[in-house]
Length: 304
Image (cartoon, rainbow, N blue to C red; front, side, top):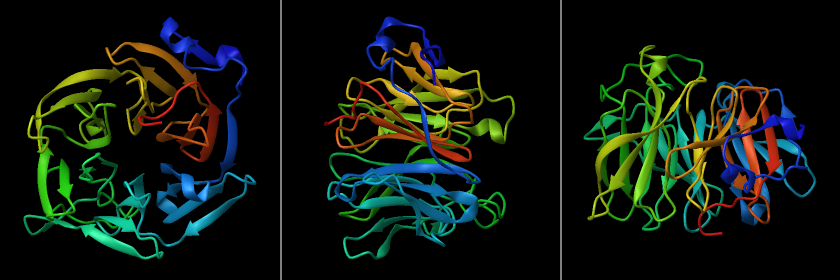
């Protein structure tokens, strides 16, 4: 990767990149790479190869790649909770699950008002330990990324789940297919991508911003934060300065908190998702279609 492969649109982006850093392709040969999560205690990255129904592992200590689990219930998005346990969105199981410290996967939530979830897609854990996740239909639309089925809910929502009480509530109900999501560093805003153009071709590809209500259990009406002219926004992460690093069809796009597109890192495949990892959390791991990429940046996740 050459310095020219960075598209700098705003000086603010220059402060986030390392001009001499190179994009590395760490592994390839996947059908659709998704859902990366960095696990500090294990010094490894996990990610999904959804159509192949397997969870992959990149060992940071020696660069080796192996199958972590297969079958895995057609995992998609992942995150960590406060105890460092992996939280997973399962297309196949149509549930949100958790990897316990003893190696068991347990189900956290499978139904809303008695009806099965569609196919949980992406997930984030808030500082109060509540779990927020999107639930579009991609895992039940066909047998390619899960098991074809009719939606029992009839809609695609974002939900808030409280593991202490078991309460599950829909917090976003105005999207066609909610997908990636992340909180602002102070957790006052929840950003959510809508990939509904896969089902309604004339629908703009957007990230919407929802202010968290004062009771911290719900959201106010959302507004458009950014619109993508190259494919879709799928998964994304927010750095500690509030910048959004997001997927698109041709690059990792970086938006400042004011919504301005400040720069891009060009990627030779469709970008699905990304996350910060490494000992200093300054290595951006990128899942893009058939491959896993990484590049060092001058940015870190909130709390680092």
